[in-house]
Image (tube, rainbow, N blue to C red):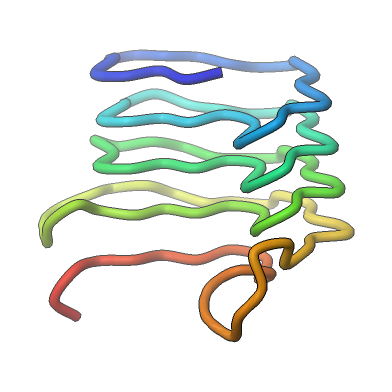
Length: 112
């Protein structure tokens, strides 16, 4: 599932399973993803880029291939993403290497 340039999004009490890429992708999104289950994704469970005040709370992410939660920015700036009380299990490193893949959660801001 991919959302782009959205305000006041609310995804709650959903199950997303078996994605061949990321489970949920939020690009320039404000709102929340909460109380949901994301399982068996080839890449990240939740991937947010250039958020504008996003709440990621009380989600369960299981068997993600490359990271549980990723919050990135395309350029330095205010983001406002809150990552609260999520449960991540069985997170993999399918892409290999020793960088940011295979971790529970990552944040990336260029130039830092």
